[in-house]
Amino acid sequence: MEYKILPVGDSALTIVFGDRIDPGISADVRAARKHLTKKNIEGVTEYVQTYATLMVHYKPGVVLYDELAVRIDQELSGLDLSEGNMKKKTIVIPVCYGGEFGPDLPFVCEHAGLNEEEVIRRHSGGEYLIYMLGFMPGFVYLGGMDPSISTPRLRDPRDRIEKGSVGIAANQTGIYPLVSPGGWQIIGRTPLKLYDQNREKPILYEAGEYIRFVPIDRGEFDRIKEQVDHDTYEYEWIIEGGK
Image 1 (tube, rainbow, N blue to C red):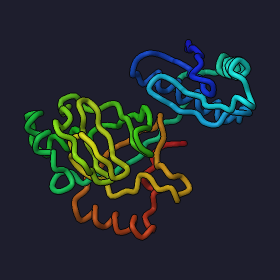
Image 2 (image 1 turned 90 degrees about the horizontal axis):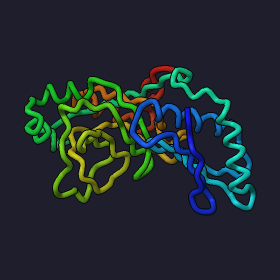
Image 3 (image 1 turned 45 degrees about the vertical axis):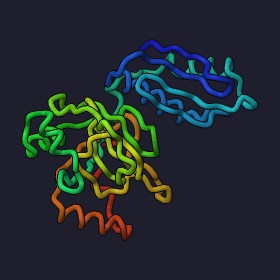
C-alpha cells in the first residue's frame, strides 16, 4: 500500500494512505496505527486516525521531523497492511427506537417512504465500520448505512441532544455519547454509557471496529439503564469477535 508522510506544523506529521472514504484504506490506517503504537517510538505522544490518514503528534524537543519520518517509513515499508491480517471486532449496541427516544423517526419514515418497522429493520440490519472518532469523546463516524433511509439533517439544530441518542444525517448514522447540541435526525437511544472517564477503557470502541445496533423495547431499556446507573452492567457481552 502506498502512503505519503507530510509535516503538520512543528509537532505533528500525517501519513496519507488515500484521498477517499474506503473500508480498505481505513483498514490500512488502523493497521499502521496499531503497529506503530506497539513500537513505543520515543517522543511520539499520540496517534489520531481519520478516514484516510494517520496523524502522529510528537515532542520536537525529543525527536525531529526528519528523524521521525525516516523511522516511520522504515516501520511501515515492510508491514503487510492487508485487511485480512486484522481480526474483526463488533460492538453490539442495544437501541430503543422511536417514541420519546426517537422524535425524528416519523420524519425519517416519511422521507424514506417506509413504515417505522421497516426503517428500524434496515437501520439495525447491518454492521457499521467505525472510520474515526471525533467531535467529542466517543462520537463515531460510521460507514455502511442502507442508503434507502438516508435523511437530511435538521434545518434548525437542537440546543440539547441527550447522551446515547442515535441519529441519521444524510448517508451517515452515529451516536451522541454525551449531552450536546446537534442537527442529526434522532431515531432512538441506547442505555449504555458509551463514554466514562472513570472506566478502565473510557470509550467502548475504537476506529476500525464495527458497531451493530440491536432493537430493544422500553422495558429492556429501563432494565439495562438501571444496571448501568448502578455500575452493575456487564459490558463484556457486547463484544463479538477477537481483539
